[in-house]
Image (cartoon, rainbow, N blue to C red; front, side):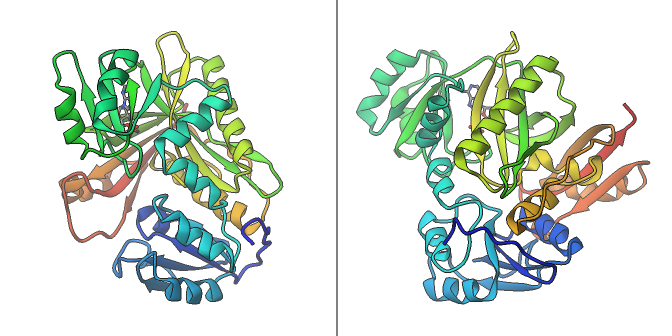
Length: 360
Ligand code: AMP
């Protein structure tokens, strides 16, 4: 069923698994095109639930709730990639699910993801699987130091990973990531981090937004800048890589490919996010079509738009207590302020963002 290709008309209902700010911005983009959204998530109060037409608050493994959800929607998608793949597959037997749940099996597991990328002939940092404590020392001997130990599953914003430098004790690193199945990667001295947000439509058309340069603080995205400071050749190659990945998956919707740019302009894929992405938020104000609208168009079976960037763009995340200063942005000429409606401020929590567009 999940491979069925729905073509929706305005008034149809899009189901969204997950209810954070990505879901919220998807709902807003869908509403502009005349769609209704039904959000499914365990959190009854959430950024997406605040703006959705309907909300189901239930555990992702609640099959009865999933059954009712499936009956109430025309297509399902995700804003959150750690939805249990079994739940997405369960849903896909009842209603089209896009992108196909098979994609989750690859992107939820760093080892499967890296193997998938490597099999396409696309470079990554050197890596090896580490399934148990005893495998870490031989892995370190192979990869060398410094290295980064990352849990295969459920890692985000630097969680579930630890660097192993020259003097570091591997046993402490293993305990530090909770003794779970991991990959060990070479620590690569990249010049910059970039991402490509790409959309693939049901007809196989791929449209990429311009390569975005990303600056992290404490492992959390702080600023995205477009265009990225890289050669035109590297930028073209980054777009080609995203295009190749989207096509190989037979993907429908928006995905993001995170890459390291090396000093010589070479590229290494770090991660694939099978969803709209924080580094694509600039597209709401800085491009003729947003990543959210592209995703909605793709899952609705509509043609994708060709994105045109409106200038040089900067997106600044408002993280944790930075939200308390939101008023200062309101009067800055050209600043577009986006607040996610989260009432609880926590360190590291993404509370909103600001986009600034400058003449190029
Ligand atoms: P990840 O969760 O894999 O996206 O990693 C979070 C951040 O850690 C990345 O954005 C990089 O800044 C850094 N990082 C991850 N892997 C490596 C690596 N192999 N070499 C150097 N830095 C890394």
